[in-house]
Amino acid sequence: MRTPAAWELMWLVALGLYAAGKWASLAAGRNPGVTVARRAAYLLLFPGMNAGEFFGGVAGRRVERPGGATFVTNIFLGAALLWGLARAVPAGHPLVRGWIGMAGFVMLLHFGALQLVTLAWRQAGRDAPLLMNEPWRSKSLMEFWSERWNTAYRDLSHRFIYKPVARHFGPRMGMVAAFGVSGVVHDLVISVPAQGGYGLPTVYFLVQAAGVFFERSALGHRALGHGAGRRCFAVAVVVGPLGLLFHPLFVMRVFVPFMAAIGALPREAMR
Image (cartoon, rainbow, N blue to C red):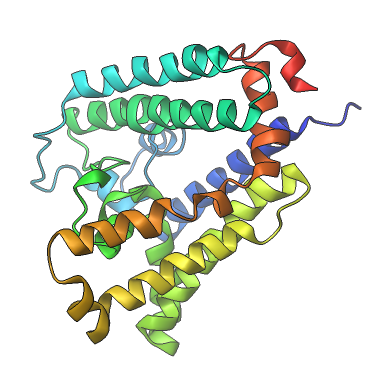
């Protein structure tokens, strides 16, 4: 039996964790009268992690911006970065190639295809929050993580991690646990396939927790204010340590070979 390539292992782990989250969110909810077909649609055709909202129908929320055209544009821009600009970078700069490819992939998938799927479900009458809720509009670090970035994981972690821990140990520990588990999950998807960089993604998410604590502290309120300072702080904390999350070993050993496997880079980039 062939040993899976590092990028194949990445997808196996990611899809396995995603499937486990979907099953947990479905099993934990009380959804009487929901047909097998609708349950299958939730599991297989909807990227979110809140079964109760999905089965309950529209709750009055509207999609006003961005519209479907924006998501289609994101797909084309992401594809241009992934299969165009990244290939144009000289082979001697694989990290640059990898980062451009990752940016393109996130734009294509998370800000494009998955957003279109969610929008289609909303138009069909489901209460389906956008996976990426215009994170660039975040007014604070807390708003970025709790309301705008990857709402699927937010729903899952809030229900199964934050609330149980906060109930017994307080909201601060609940927040540390939610960010910490997110770090461990990313280590499984990123560091394990890369066979190195262990713990760096977890450190990244603990930095985010520390940033939220500072932002909400009395000192943070005085230092950051309520406008541009708070926004700049959020950008600095999210973007500044990204090298911990997507560390060089992951980019070189996992993502660049993945790009070569899908034709975004020449085949020799897999070696």
